[in-house]
Image 1 (cartoon, helix red, strand yellow):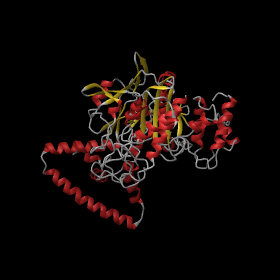
Image 2 (cartoon, chains in turn blue, purple):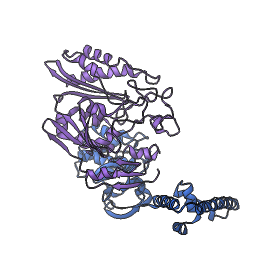
Image 3 (tube, chains in turn blue, purple):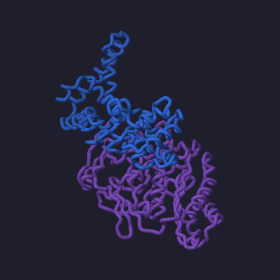
Image 4 (cartoon, rainbow over the protein chains, first blue to last red):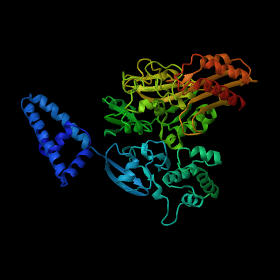
Length: 240
Length: 326
């Protein structure tokens, strides 16, 4: 029973109804507010919880010790599951980060939510739009379908890592020159993909560019101008 | 997404086999399908075993065959110079699948194990015998434009979504797997299965088995080959119907031929009857048309996908015509 001493009663509730840690946090925030109605609701919840938990303690008191041990172990596992993070060393735009992350964190969420690099966009979050395209170890990939926990020691380049000081990357300049966007939401993904498209050697004709850029959807329909921008950078022959 | 534990398997295949004795654990390689399924709560493993550290990435040409490691990336195989030269059908099929970003992530083994894109499978509010056995099939009597016309059952009419696998079925590939009971080899055309009463099983892999490589025996289909994929947009969409066609021609006579279809069944659909019909015939559009019509015999449609019979025959004719003209 020792673990109960460091768990507050709310956490015990979580064990009974394993929903999400986030809910727990929101609940706590809500209960801090001076909203009388909410306080009343929380109070009634607490009473209900108390009755449930006293019942649980009574049951535990009459349970053979071996079974108590077993169930304790199971609870310990559940707590571990909720608190578990994995260490991750990752380099983003030349800067090394040593982090502890939940295994389910995608690379996209890591970049946007933890490293505040919001240039990489979340479009569909299901690998269908390409807005989240970044380079990992020099290769373009979809950060929304990549678990950050699988990117140990990876070198990531995002749209924020392209410009050198105030000097824009040639692809960024070409997108501005050719009006390669309207709303701009898909643009970071388009630019990351466009650079890779040239580096991979798949920008030898307009048809080939269109095929190898097909993973980047633009709902504004700026495709023609995007192909113009990539063609110009390819023909410019600059090292990317 | 439900949280889970992740274990990095870095050393050997044995380590993976041992780790895989865990219950409710799944292997993860590219993750392009699995992460999506986990986000939608269609699949919710407790543990993931990251196998990307394993030494299974090589493409090796040995006597009589090529061995492609299960962790070779789709783009790596598609653009390999020797694969393009000796197995151009495979290269074409791979390049027709997904987008370049996804091909950079997705592995050969993962491609084989990807789940159907049947929308009822992905929507956890809908019945689906594949996702939840005995819950029913939403696609039968529902929206079934993308669905099977061959080998379906009253339990499931979903189709296998891969392009790569259609070429591998045509090229008589073998799948090498390793599991708790040791290593074994599965004929590619026996790897995926028809739904029957157990559509939750996509393939004949046993529990805890890991695909280690795919082997393709040498063949003469190096010139007159084509992979024709018909879809709702020119690129980056799943096939309505696709055809892998390979011809071995001698003086315009078909010495040998391989034909397989995608988007029509729960597994890559090899067209053996049409192949037999074509052998020994002289190349002509009429002969290809007859082969296409023959291949569509026995097709059963479900309302939304009635068009696939005509589309299928036309796609076979066109794929063979393009292959012969190369």
